[in-house]
Image 1 (tube, helix red, strand yellow):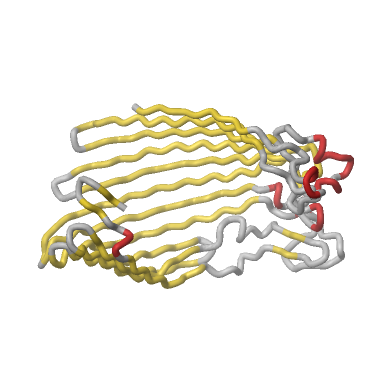
Image 2 (tube, helix red, strand yellow):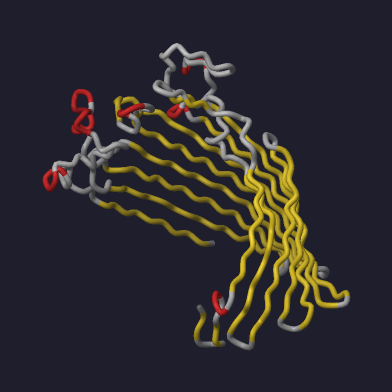
Length: 320
């Protein structure tokens, strides 16, 4: 069993740290109060089978120092920003649970896990448009909640066929849910009509969710001693943005005892996150910005080449 925690506090900068010097209303650094605890319980069912249960909890709150997005706290109605100095204006709670299984078999290794994480972001409401954007404008709190479920499994099978190889087969399933009323409060009052998007925040959904499923296959081939060739293929399916194939090819070459050369090429898939794909977001008035589900997922190709490098080591002495 492993258990550890942490408590810390950082004081904020003075309210007038910049104004006293140059007349600017830019705020200094906020203070922070942080508490967290982590626990891991391992059950060794047999010498080759281990089950791990993990739990983590954290709370982080600020000590407000007058920050506004455009450094214009002097424009705050009724001096609200001034009155909040030294108080907690936002707090973040995060909890996570995890169950991980590791197994050793005659044919290789296996690993599987299920995980859940919940984050509550509670903060005083802020302006969402114009010069008051990012400025606290209310003593009412709004809570945005993000929940994530994840499952993974992976199998590593060593074998010999023409050369020593290790075949890796894995899968991932991720489901995220976001409820973000704090970002959906803007009202479209300029008379514009936008198809599919209401100007009334009470008529727009504050919720969004996405599910991503992936499966991958990789083969680590030791072509000759010191030379590893690693071809791979991955398939992803996103419930909003469709499917994608991502091939990859990596090479690792030892250059003597102290240097390793690495190179690779791959196609990478990245879908818009929940904030970017949220239909309820609306930002008027001068120009109305709305979120859209017609965004495309990014699929790019990258090449990497690392030398001396990145991996220099002298056995039993140094490593960079």
